[in-house]
Image 1 (cartoon, one colour):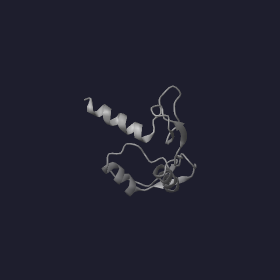
Image 2 (cartoon, one colour; image 1 turned 90 degrees about the vertical axis):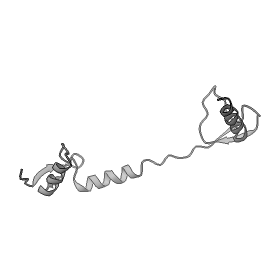
Image 3 (cartoon, one colour; image 1 turned 90 degrees about the horizontal axis):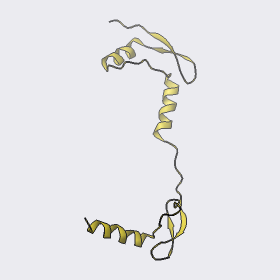
Image 4 (cartoon, one colour; image 1 turned 45 degrees about the horizontal axis):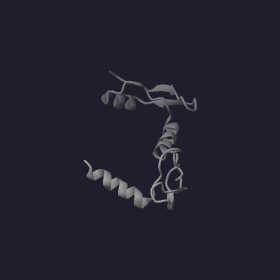
Length: 101
């Protein structure tokens, strides 16, 4: 099968772009079924967004340890009704649970 350059429209910016015969051959060799949807610029922009997804801000919350009553900082927002432990009590509970297996 002989490929010819084809004009496609980008789904992001609406601009026309050329899908070359060489690119079509590459797609055929890889058994890709769908034509490209984005121009090179929009594809690159999308790739950089995917490489650095929204940087989540670290949450630090002041809380009182449910076991010893010590004030502590935890790296999450506690859920009401669930116990919160300081690092020491958390470690003790973790290792106590591991020994019971």
